[in-house]
Image 1 (cartoon, helix red, strand yellow):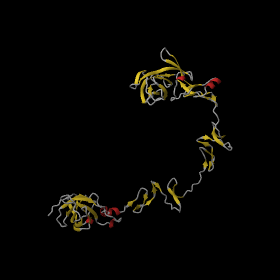
Image 2: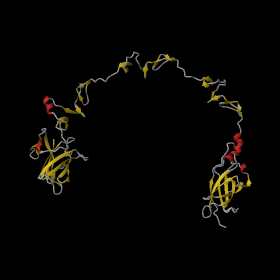
Image 3: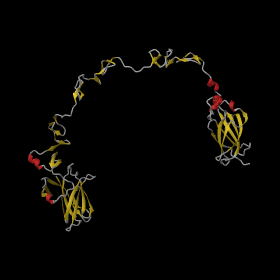
Image 4: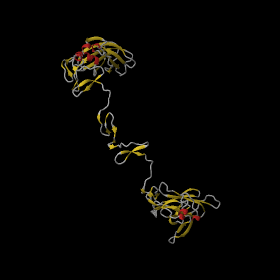
Length: 441
């Protein structure tokens, strides 16, 4: 005989359908298990014989009910039975008192279909089939209370009457159709349903007169004038009351102007920008000379002044400047277009053989060759404490022809940069050494 492992995988089944009437509950419940052999393989598609026992108190307790059944496993080795449908060996399933302690279900299986039960498993019934449990409690569930009723109830059980709501009396006056319970100060009493109605008496607050026809004589506790308004008027606060007033069309402010404005309203002038004074021309000739000029800030004078515009990308040619002597060495430059005096800021001399400087001032940061004859030089305008204003003029001399040089705005490193482009006598791009001086006003 093939030896089988004495174990069974158990599943509590879905509880049986139960009728609401406890007395009609069937004395049966479903049960499922997976049958495995000694090799832990499922016993599939096989007729098996099972003995089912209901044990009380412990896994080895007294069997209060025993039955046998023959069932067929499916392809997964699962077998499903209805306990109560088998051949009863002992006991009565309908007389088990499920509320009296704990119960266990023990299954013994012969996978050959005989009575040599070699596979055994026991598990606790954690959820007693509720219809069966209810069937043993019909007396407790169906018994009606007796004695004197209390609280909001009056009379005696089993037929008391409600004579209170939340401890407040309910009148025993018989109601008529459409009435509702209303509190009369002493008890809940049948009363005709209210249809709303209007308040009566003296009006208060922002209302005046008497109900049901008061008038509004205030807004948020502030008086409203009873002066009759005319068409187009609005309510305006006059310091004492809201009174009818002609709607404002705007109007102009009056008095002295402040902030960046000067003079008086309604015709002030812009006297400052960002709190810094603006220096305006004072004569007709000054205004004529100001043609095409723009406001530029002077760090030296701490004011906005009318000056010629500076394009950071404009080309600078020698005709724009005249050279003078400054402290016996570097030239002082006077700009011909606005007469500005320029002081040397930095200078340098390039070494074309290796793309570096032969000499330079400390505030010259770097030189880069962009392409044939084209270079970019970065300088630090803040290194000599110039502040926010940096108005450079660049003078470049070279062994070849300088065809263009232009400045650009500070880059992401806050350095100022300018480009130098050179060409030979035939106008072709050519690398050559060059000197440069940067002036600042």
